[in-house]
Length: 71
Image (tube, rainbow, N blue to C red; front, side, top):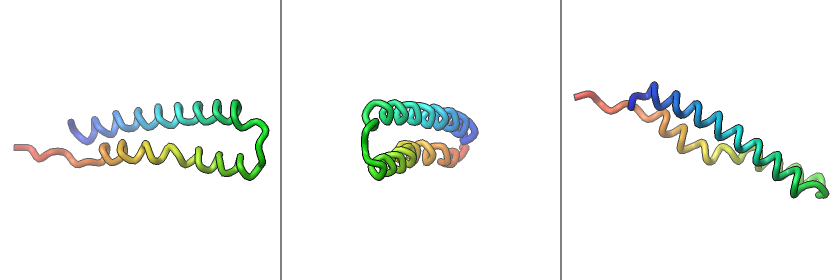
């Protein structure tokens, strides 16, 4: 697979990941975090806002892998 195809697939994958992550986080915040302290809510939103980075790192690494040399 060429790097061009990997980047296309990875870009679509990242868009899906971020969209699903945002929807999941919003649903979790609305259902569980309704009556909590402001500091706890702030910490939750910071962690949830940066939490999509960990699952995205292997995908970005795969996307940037160079093409195999042609024989």
